[in-house]
Length: 265
Image (cartoon, rainbow, N blue to C red; front, side, top):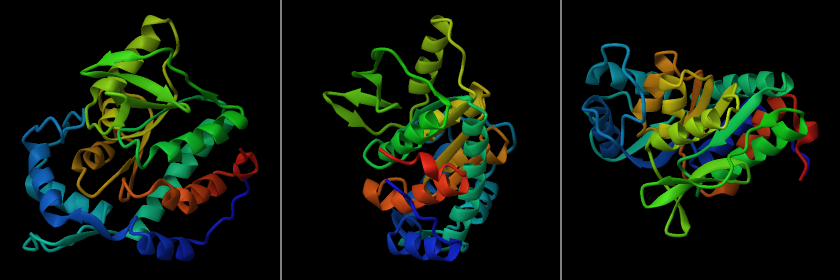
């Protein structure tokens, strides 16, 4: 498969048209509720992120406005919310640069997602490119018991399985279990974690590993992690559209990273 590099302007229009950015599906009510949930330590929202600054509702709202592009009016409490395509692309630039540095340096990379129905194919493609370019993509042997299922790897991407299906989770525990297994086997930890949600939060905030992430406008925890310097970059986007809609975004990452020549199945 060959890829074509989209200009920033073309990509911005595409992202809004596909609702990866722009008027996204996430309602305003969820965004505001999750800011408070993060501050309250809600298990679904803290995402393994240890607060190292004195965050308030006002400061987290401002962060989400400035880094994600949610509606800037705090009195707007119901209806559609938004993500800025320009902020998304600016973050993609940083994301691609870090990815490129790790891959070209033949570093150890670990890919993981909490949103298998949307983002797993994104990471699987990045993992293929990384491996073909000479980087070491870490593999997890077997399945690690977790709640009513297990943590397993499918096409190089760590995910959570339950009752025969792949499930959504914000828990940091799956990443903790994977890193503990690597340590128990005497294997080295990843040089770069490519992930999202609680798995990225744990990797960057608690395990202190170099981490790049993606996050939705209702995921304040992972943007707090970036603001604190725990996660190197978090790309704002709708994290659960149909996987094929992310293809131009992945094209952009791979092209900017200078790895398009390796993007073949």
